[in-house]
Amino acid sequence: MTYLLAVVLGVVAGVLAGLFGVGGGILFVPTLTWLGLTQLHAEATSLLAIIPTVLVGVWRHHEYGNVRWRPALIIGLSSVGATVGGAQLAESLPESTLRKLFAVLLIVTAAQIAWRAHRRRA
Amino acid sequence: MAFVLIGLVAGFFSALFGVGGGVVIVPLLLLVAKWDLRNATATSLAAIGLTATAGVITYVIHGEVEPLYAMLLGVPAAAGSFGGSTLQQRLPVRTLSFLFAALLVVIAIRMLIQ
Image 1 (spheres, each protein chain N blue to C red):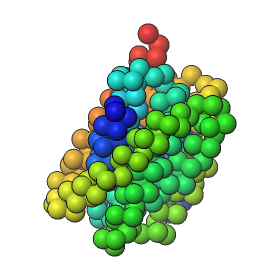
Image 2 (image 1 turned 180 degrees about the vertical axis):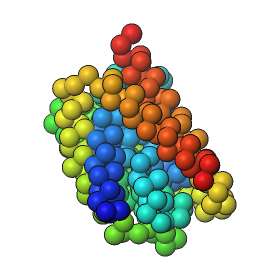
Image 3 (image 1 turned 90 degrees about the vertical axis):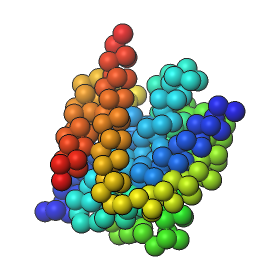
């Protein structure tokens, strides 16, 4: 039952990814901690789950002609070095602090999605 | 140059929180580069592929990645992503946006009081 719900949340995360251009990690991490992983293991595992999600999303968006490849490559490649710093900080923070920071990130993301939806009508 | 800065910020956030970095990339492309939403989301997804791969490698070295759990979520999410990107092309996603935003706030509150 738990795993079935995890699969459902996986699908929801994927829809979110395709719709809003996020990788789905925002839902993967809470789902994984709920399955019993620590915050740190959940974050590490979430990054791996993101890869198939974005591959499919990119393939679809590419077919629709929405992807601008040059900027995507520049952004993606310049992010590589910075991931080492981010991971190091995550490793050094206490579990509860990391979890609270993640909750803040969720609220910021929610605000942003709502703001975009609101702006689109204007 | 702006893209390099966006990448640096996104990479740091991505690895710190185990997310792709889209939450940083999309608003910056919308606000700084003045792109429209479809181009911003699509390009963000492409960049995230590279960012997440780099993050995974870092965490694999530390031994914190659980591949079975990743597949449990990642495979269904790939199917969902197919649906989501198709829907974005066809539907007004406004109501759905507010529902997702509400869901995220509920999860955040749960994490804060736990």
